[in-house]
Image (cartoon, rainbow, N blue to C red):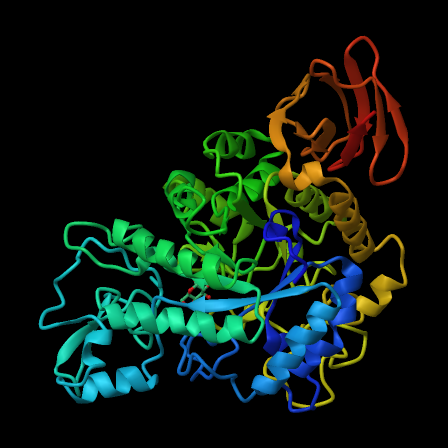
Length: 540
Ligand code: GLC
């Protein structure tokens, strides 16, 4: 879009669930034209790139992650012309668009699977993974533990079992088959030709299966992703692949290759540790996971997040930590799903504004490009009585009206959050835009401050020594002679903290969020932080 192939290294991302964002034609479903109406809002917030959850034709057994046609738009959302217009309108505002690319599986409604199950001799039979027994690859874990009992499903019509890592309505593609490999490269090309800026590559650890392994992160998978990357380098040098690999840092590191595989990867393990640190009022979990995080190649970047459209995953924690997180953050069993917690950011943090802002302070200042989940910038609530992960996918609350300015329809795809203190009367964009002290404005100011300092995106990370190593988390971000010092108070009490200055740093500092000046004395900076307070300082 602007001749900067490394744009993702300092972009702020925003995840949009199109169905939930804005309904332009009054049918109760959000759509692409509705999103176009709201691009000015996203531009004003400071968003550089939108990630769209799947927008393709689908029977919606997994909300579009079960794709029935990789080259079209779900009729609820509009059509390919609407999509082209969305890309053009976003680009006009210097906003990029990426969408989910579901490589691992299709819907069972996909014509490939329909042909495969009907006819053993069809070329599509070998697009999927079949077996006469359900005993193969027994070391592969089951991911959707609450609903699935096996990774194999019997297909009556085919007279064989087929392999699926997610719902049984999502048969896995067979990447041993070169035709499948090519088909998916063609799908990427299709969307890149329409002007898209890249993909969030869904569920990539599971592309291949091999007996005697847990069927995750196999070398064959990396080889295929490198092939996809080579295709990008040649045909779409500004396009990105963002990896969804819910794995430990060492295993995710492999997805960056030598800078010749994925451009970005979500940092899954850091996310639950932010919540642990907030609840324990102790920075140790964040420190430990970042110390365990390997260096990554110069042309790659982590993507960090607090919440997304799925359950808050507890896969990357120990069994004890998981039990503790469930007790603390999901006391009601309805709040739990698979190995996670299906709640939004604000309710998780007891709707406490200071804590929500502190979580965002960590998100925007620790390494990685941050991604916001729609509605979290205004502190939207959730509805645990809706099934699966639908409770965190409710209509965006634009104003205080009954349908929250989301739609003019009476019947919506899902109910607007109706309970105090999260109903539209209390939580909506319009009233927060009118209040300079709202969550929305604080987050907008954080985004602007972050974007004004390249060291937040490209700088290295070094811990700053303080006299409150548990209660506070202080660190430097440095690049090109620029030094930032961030101090977060994780505790629920006010703290006066003495930060020992690193060699050559200070003594003068300016506050990036409210313009105050600070002066260090004798090699120490003393700062008073309110409960859950934070300071973003620039040296010099
Ligand atoms: C990813 C998506 C999730 C989906 C799954 C299967 O984990 O984030 O929503 O259910 O893949 O496609």
